Length: 222
Image (cartoon, rainbow, N blue to C red; front, side, top):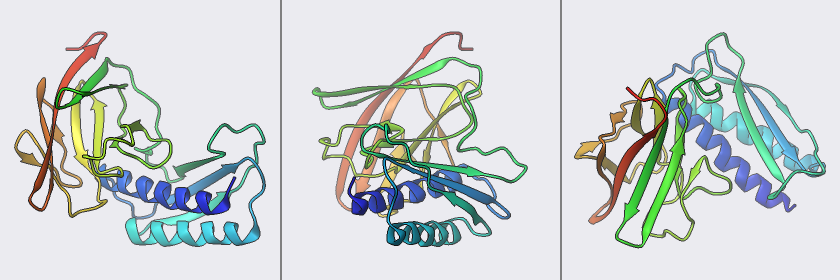
């Protein structure tokens, strides 16, 4: 376990957590965040201090009014690759949109297609929280292959299967990329409902990447 890799992965993870919470439209004022950093062996004091500072800086800058209440560093020798895992949970009285459990409902199957060679089905259970879909560093929530170089890296696109419909959302990461779903711009905090089939466009200056999508349902769906 290389501690430089742990630091880089933690920075990506805390940014993703903050952006997902922001995209949900939730008010972060008064939010108290508890962080867990699980590793296969004890981290050095330097890395522990670095993680404390990184967590506090990102939460303060990306979630106005929120604070890091605690950071725990449990060690699990049998932790699977890549040898680290991060958890984030709020401690206020409101339900945590990022960590709450799945709700009853049909499973949505979102199939993404690029040209003829790239077809990627994603199964999305019913829940109120958002999932990031894309070329994500490390283990992702809905990870697309790292070799899909035509897609921007990071958790830019968000999806949610909630109350019988599939929605697309936009995180605050990498704002230079403009994302459109069926002709409508995606903006943080303003989700767009998915059709039975349509297209997602990633705009980067004069370059446009188009993904076709289709939504199917498993189980009872109104």
